[in-house]
Length: 183
Length: 183
DNA sequence: AAGTACGTACAGAAAAAACTGTACATAATG
DNA sequence: CATTATGTACAGTTTTTTCTGTACGTACTT
Image (cartoon, rainbow over all chains, first blue to last red; front, side):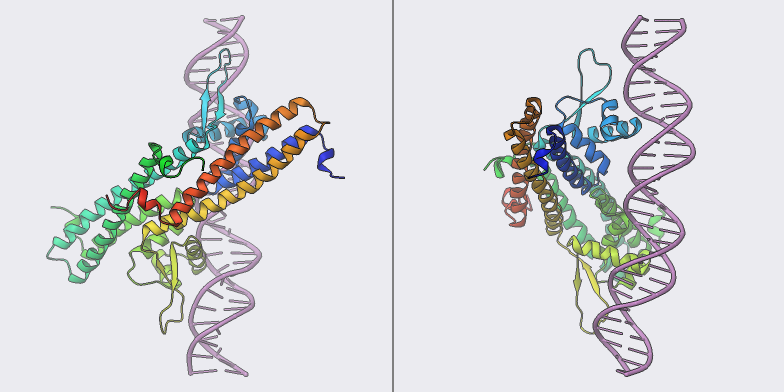
């Protein structure tokens, strides 16, 4: 006789959710999101109604301060949104239900940030290397290295342009013409 | 009179590289890679010849143990490869020069891992929820929740299938038909 | 206007991660 | 075969990150 099928229905439901929440938070952890934040997202994902900070606190057994910072984290990533309900004073949060959109927002935010950091650094260094090459006082073997670096940076910038165009196709949803949602 | 143009050429080269290495490591940090590991990648990126662990140690001013684990990290991500040179006893490592390939490998590895964790958890929970619904002893309001969860998980699985197909298009390089390398 | 509820800033405590040095296993050298 | 070089496992330390409790500002309630 199976143990699980004897269990109380609520507990079985709880366990099925818990497993998925664990997987989600592990997954999010791969992308630099704390496991706690991941579990909070998971909790919100299964919750039918939006949650208050105090409810989250109870649900995860953590401090209200942590819930505040964790949820802000998720809001910044656009994985969770604040919602308004008539007559409810507390802030209410709910998980973004569309995972395609979540995916797009998450990587758009990350990639654009990363690209812009790198592009500006590279452009600045590229200029400096160029003036190094034009400087007659600089030793030739240094210039050789500079020339190689310029080549590397130029092709890196080309790559970043590609990333930007890829992100564009996410934002515009064009990507779904190439890889359709359902096959 | 500009300060920089008075500087020794080698130092100017060094500084231009350093700026880019910082940006690269910051960028990699966004994806859950340690900044040290990022700096190591940056160092390897600019180095024309492959490096030994001892050279890395000197270059980054860190312990050999750290270099060993960091470089293994990069090899696992396929951002760095071990190379062989006749007569050289030490292990030699060099950065993968093709950033498109690096991008593809990095996200393929990460996404496949994430998807497989989640899919197996979800399939298991999906089965359990199904048997919950078929169990006549379970209260109706629990079954309602289970039905909603099943719906959520089903569409999540659909989403993961999409991710897999997206990754397929990276691996097969088909993505470059959609977003060409050069515009 | 006084009182209350709510969310968050901040400092300190707890936990996790990164880093180091030693010790050792393996393989190359003489 | 003995010796030396090389990379890594592991335990302990340092550094970083996460988490908590208190204190406080703001805004709602009466």
